[in-house]
Length: 103
Image (tube, rainbow, N blue to C red; front, side, top):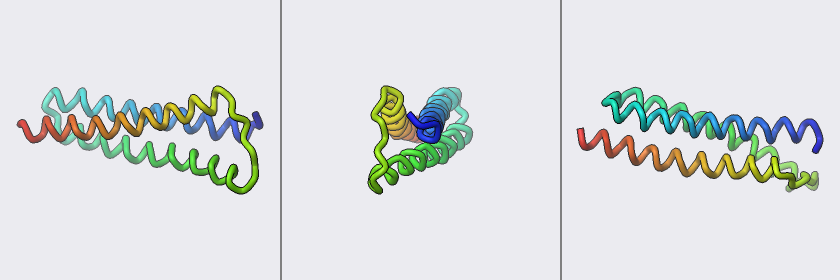
C-alpha cells in the first residue's frame, strides 16, 4: 500500500474511532444527568464522523477516477470502523434523546 493511501486509511480509522468514543461518552454522561454535555459530545461525534467520511470520500474519488486501491485488511478495517461508528452515533442519539425526554 502506498504511503499516501496508508495515511488516508489510518486517518479514517482514527477519526471513526474518535467519533464512536464521543458517542459513548454522550451515553455515559447523560446517564449522570448531564444532558447538555451529552448533546455536546454528540455534536463532537457528528463533527468527527464528517471528517472520517471526508477521508472515505477521498478514497472513493480516487477509485472512481481510475486510481486503484489495494484492498488490504487495513482498508477493510477502516470501512468497518466508519460504518460501526456511524451506526453507534445514531444509536447514541436515540439513547440521549430518550434520557432527555424521561427527565
